[in-house]
Image 1 (tube, rainbow, N blue to C red):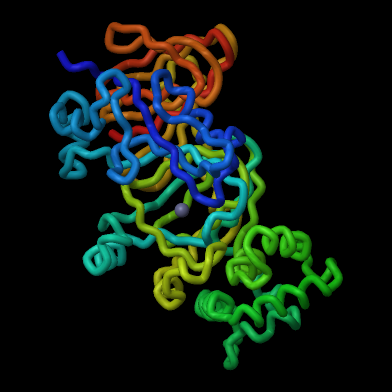
Image 2 (image 1 turned 90 degrees about the vertical axis):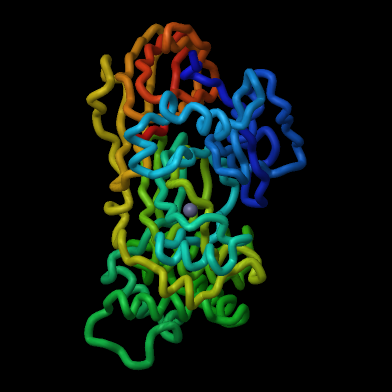
Length: 407
Ligand SMILES: [Zn+2]
């Protein structure tokens, strides 16, 4: 009989925006997997631990060393289940959960929708490695700062009246500041020369703070972001003037739709996305790494259009016996996420799910009874659980666990 609960060994990648050495939660969780060969080098910046079967950074079954995807291919009916395999017409996991540890701004980015992704993948498969879209969610594990979606038009319009921002407005002005005007502004900011961007930043910093209204954080953030990249980075202007700046706390979630503009700034998060790795970058990265501004701007979506719309609320989960598990359900078919929080001595049962799941323990100690066996839960332990398995948790020390699933 096939084992339906498989402890996984995952890997962590290194990007310059990741946290240094053991300051990176992604890296420390990754290193805590028993028997892993992953070792932290204090000189490296560790950005993302991936938990899933995307070929760029796949997960392995801890006990046997097999690639998880090979095991899924061989046992699709038992592990993925017919419903999910039929729904997506493949035996891959339709989602990819990650732990991110962010020391400085990630590239200002969007993930193209399915149509654009398939065109880009057909043209440049080495850069766009799949034809899928990549809507994503981010759940804060502690304080988390992010730029996400656009501010309300009225708020952007009033900022654009500041004299240093005048040159980014269209020459012919419509009576209303609408999304077309905003698109022009974003494009003008992203296309501006290094010199123009630097001068604009200096001019904004020279203005009295009260000129910025509710956005009085802008002049303080310019030096902070300039230090991370450069005062000539176009991303700073777009992020500060047009995008929502969110300061989130542990448990808060945000949802980024396909084509949604975003740039995460600091913190440790659990991220989950549809199975894809496609991205268009335009700022907070070297000029040579940027994708075409025209393509970026033509793909842009203008939802969300205020900070509230970007928030993904936690709901109660009908499959939780003791109410210790919350549900984050973004408006898409590829995945939902559960967050289980147990105090010392607490227990919880999660109903059989109709598809495969991946769970990571980010805090605490305890046990999980599943499929007739008892498994240890501890920080950094990651399990794949096949469809149709009830999970019984018991905490000996306060537990936090996150479970991505589809059904
Ligand atoms: Zn992203």
